[in-house]
Length: 105
Image 1 (cartoon, helix red, strand yellow):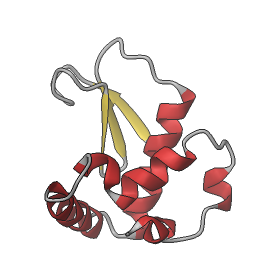
Image 2 (image 1 turned 30 degrees about the vertical axis):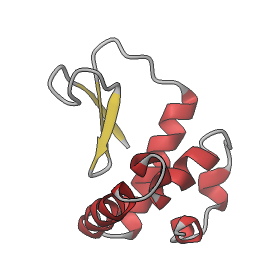
Image 3 (image 1 turned 120 degrees about the vertical axis):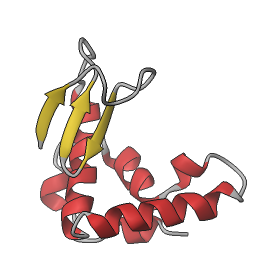
């Protein structure tokens, strides 16, 4: 995963965003190991879904979850997998393809 420091991407108020496997980070933002693992999990998800399908599925799931109780963002299966495993240093070596599917409820 390539890391690019930019004052335009992501928007102010955000630390980082992963777009097509490239992590854009605000200047001066601290990149913890946890944040890097979280974004690397997203990169793995993107690659296995040929990038475009990842974004389509992410958007559809977010829209569906907007009308349910709780945070739509935190309930997205891709985010749940990343948050649940961002502290596991070995997760990406053990991760099965499409592991996010088990978080789809």
